[in-house]
Image 1 (cartoon, helix red, strand yellow):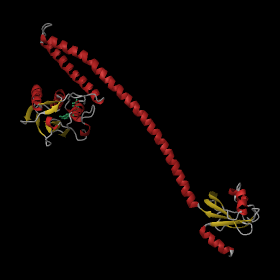
Image 2: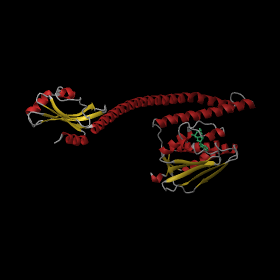
Image 3: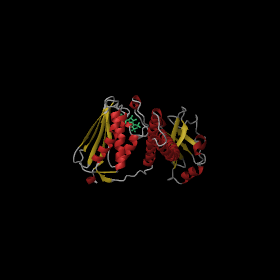
Image 4: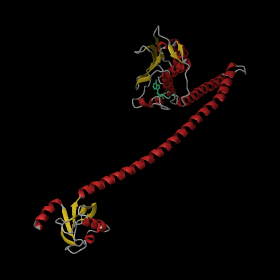
Length: 382
Ligand code: ADP
């Protein structure tokens, strides 16, 4: 076939070839697209000189010559073509007629680039995996450190709260002794001062009790003593005990307890704590003259009783509502009414409700009031 015809055919395919004799001397070469970037007249040159990738493969070329059925191949050989562009080649050497070697070069650039990208992506992936591994390790150690700090914090809070209780009990005891007059009569100013000491000591007692409850809840050590009880009666008692508080603030108290309610399965002390917390909050966050309602009845689920404490107080802004009941969180509206507190009561209340197998939720409208709902299991449902 005419060599120009061969060239035209090969150009389409981006293929080149070189024919060499048994001494590896180039006899002819056809490279229509400059794939091999051959020198001007390659004839007479040694094959490994113009294809340096063959250097060291002479024994293989020998064996192709000797054994006509053998072929020798180098894949994805990186070179530059005659225009200086990077190319990847597949070099195939087969034996031709009359002790000749035929070296065919095929453009494999697309495959080579794809493979290179693949390898690059694989390396990046390996690197990312290694970095991820290191991040996981440092996260684990940061977590362990956090757990250690958390344990230390719980221990500190627990020890501090315990240590505060004894001196507080002594202060309360002496304040009570002074009030009885056994140590001599107090004038009005002194009696008022002793009253304030007593009130503040009580407040601190509540704070230490809450801190101790918090550490018990966190450690999973708060256990209930459940018994079959009359929650309606308990609610009446708690409300009666707090009535004076509401009167002092000129707050109207409305109580509605359904008759013939089934008995509930509760820890009486802890259920009382739930009631006191909710009623105490309704009192704190409702301005004087406001209204507070307590209702106890059946829930839509016959296995539950539903307690609701609602007020016409400051309410809670919608953006604050999701965080209500988490540690030490106080809504903006709490400062608006200068109510004392430190944001643990509802966390403990919610935990106590959970331990009772009940649910706690609320609705609130800023400036209009809030309603907190709690469910308790009836004794016959357990
Ligand atoms: P504390 O009253 O000591 O701040 P709580 O845990 O009992 O802590 O309550 C958390 C927060 O929830 C309060 O600071 C207050 O912002 C909000 N809150 C609770 N009860 C009411 C209520 N009845 N009306 C308005 N806000 C309330």
